[in-house]
Image 1 (cartoon, chains in turn cyan, brown):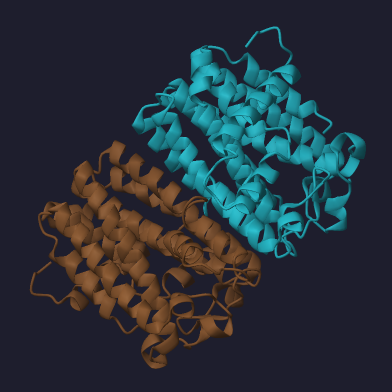
Image 2 (cartoon, rainbow over the protein chains, first blue to last red):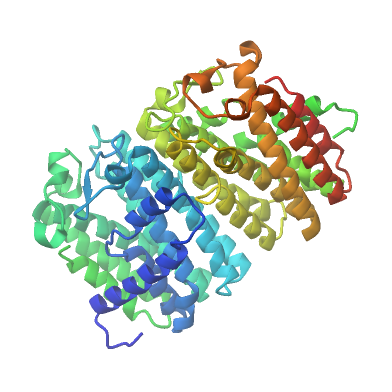
Length: 304
Length: 304
């Protein structure tokens, strides 16, 4: 990966590589009921920034200054995108957020029906773990590291992680009144998978325990900044750039950072958290952290 | 475990040990939104035969003639019960089978709401993988074996396994006409988790490749026999013993073995498959196969 790429170019190029890899992880000739395969592929192909897999690969490369590490991490990058995708499919269900559109396309259950959407989500979640194992089977990641990554995903995507955040979000829909409650939701719904992505890449890159700790701090602050920026963009973003309607949080009476502490304070909080993130990254003393610094800045300034 | 126990006593006693272990796998003081924790625990505690975890432990012991192997396999036994439980929670949802009761208790979504039931299922599925890793972390199972078990679960419970079977079942509800289609559904919906359970126990017990193959044949035949027996009991079983209404398959227009090939033929098929299973088990030449033989006979003769 040439250093001359801008962050945006790096993200686009890496996202394209992830999308190619996802196609081989969900092969068209897979021995699976055709409609289930289509339903899984429909949502995986639906695009998005591919931020989480890009973070896996960027972290692996940052530790090792070695593109081979990023290559070895690709099955894990695919795994986290499958987890993210399954969570969106289930989130969009009528019993949950009841969304008909996502990224300008009909949501999974609108195309394949609710039952198939539930099963496609279950299958993607399960297949993510298969993909992690392939990093050991095919890409030479040591079994101990692959098992460590399985464990971290099961925690950070599970009841005490992402699913816990979604449950808290749902339970709190009528009653989130404090920034602490909202922080809990954002941390688990959003930061936990970002932390996982960075840590998984770092594990594969061969990070030290100290580096892993700093990378975790980086991810926690970055994830929260990312989510607050999402809240802000929903309020003042450009619908054309976002590819979705703004003000949906207000219409759905969602409690957000801007709602609780105001727009200006929220913008300052994004900057502050990005600084916190970059400071932790500095302390990690990685071999080649430039991409990760670039991504942190890029996310803070993004308009979509 | 004394050899003097009957099969039924062995199953009951082992099921009780699994239930105790499940309590520690889902600790009451877990840092998880309380309602999510309750929803997960509600369905895990809802009973049932605990057949799959019992098979994990029985297989481990059969290979090694060593109760230590069964002890090491306990986290995997808990994992498969969590997988089975999540599949029932999602299966019972209004968008799927729309069941209000299971084993005489209200189904998860009737108590906790649909959204929480979806999330509880997702969380149990995710936590199953955590539990498998604990067999290495706590119980000394080698990382390579734990990773192998993660991989097998991700296949046998995933799109090409259990979830695939459920999808085929759902898609075929109006049009299953051949025994081959029904066999596909039964194999994936039911046999795959039984095969997983036996193989996982065998891996932990230290089985040879040849033994693993025979154990797989045993599980495939046993799982199919088990499911046909289920179909039969739904038709002619005793409601009091079954703890559920009979004839539900007929009322729901489900295609079953008795529907396709008749009751008597189905009963003969259960016996034939049990013989096939026992023959494979014989060929596996395990150290102490008596429990597995006992379970095969017990399942064939069961009335609930």
